[in-house]
Amino acid sequence: MKKTLLITGGAGFIGSHVVRLFVNKYPEYRIINLDALTYAGNLENLKDIQDSPNYTFEKADITDANRINELFAQYSFDGVIHLAAESHVDRSIIDPNAFISTNVMGTANLLNAARTTWKDNMEGKRFYHVSTDEVYGSLGEEGFFLETTPYDPQSPYSASKAASDHLVRAYGNTYHMPFVITNCSNNYGPNHFPEKLIPLFINNICTNKPLPVYGDGKYTRDWLYVIDHARAIDMVFHGGRDGETYNIGGFNEWQNIELVKLLCKTMDEKLGREPGTSEKLIAYIKDRPGHDRRYAIDATKINKELGWYPSVTFEEGLSKTIDWYLENEEWLNHVTSGDYKKYYDTQYTHR
Ligand code: NAD
Ligand code: TYD
Image 1: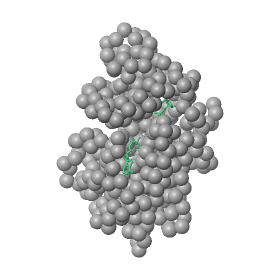
Image 2: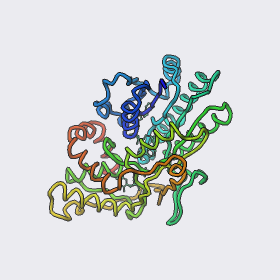
Image 3: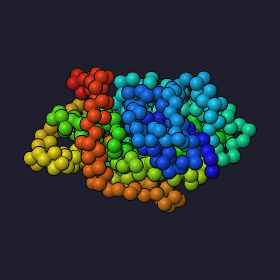
Image 4: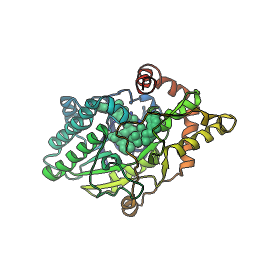
């Protein structure tokens, strides 16, 4: 069936994998990638599909309501997959307002435009909001986040994402907007901006810089390979039930310090370094304020309803990810020049 889909944030890490999957898998769909190209957005991520006949890029900011309304009027989108966001917890601690503006107001602008465009016929329309497990807050040593876990966001980032999730559900309830929401755990993989743990540490190992582990290093995350997240988004977009939430996770918990040691060992092997060389770079530093102790997802619902399960093990995914960074030095050099240095100094050097 012909459809025109809006994917927001498609030049970012996860968005670029979603855009690629949809453009290649659904030649009958017209895919419009809307992205403001902030520091995190990079069209180099999409070089392989940029000339595809079913793909169009629109540089636009979701906080600009007029422009968003114009684009909805121009394209009459049948569906939205909304990924555009400010996404890094540490940056949200430095500048919360950017998060409130993009994640809350930006989402409201998209919902308003969709509501206006679809008001006479919601049949076959879908607003898919891509969210995070961080909205549920922090777990102790036991238990998992379920779709029914009460929201308890602890950082400006997670609070802004929680607010946007609430808005989407409110539009569903009040205006009968057909929606789905997914809350996913930490992603890793190719094209990940080197401010998040895994790509930052890969870059620092390559350049022999310290590996800044926050606090005692015993914080725990559930890691998922980004292509498995994109597969889940495809399945939920096409098969998820209206008004439902699905948690997505990797069934793969790691304490940060254990993950960093595995990364060091694997990189020593790949770089032909003496075993133990990269581990010497580990440097414990002052903790992140309000640091969530543990995230862990129970992804039974999406598994049972839609048959989704991660397709790669963590060891395979991590190995593929490291290989990608080693083979794409130019990409890494590009994104770590300019403003990145300023951010790095503020976050780590003057800590
Ligand atoms: P990212 O920071 O790599 O990419 C975000 C993209 O959004 C960038 O291309 C950026 O240019 C664009 N963007 C930012 N502000 C914008 C604005 N005002 N208007 C238009 N575009 C704008 O983020 P990501 O890691 O790919 O995350 C994508 C989505 O998935 C986010 O909504 C995030 O909350 C969610 N999520 C991320 C993870 C993760 O581990 N990275 C896990 C679960 C959920
Ligand atoms: P991050 O990749 O920023 O994702 P999130 O905070 O959204 O989970 O961080 C993952 C974990 O790694 C988190 O517990 C914070 C920790 N961390 C460090 O120890 N050092 C770092 O330099 C970074 C960026 C993260």
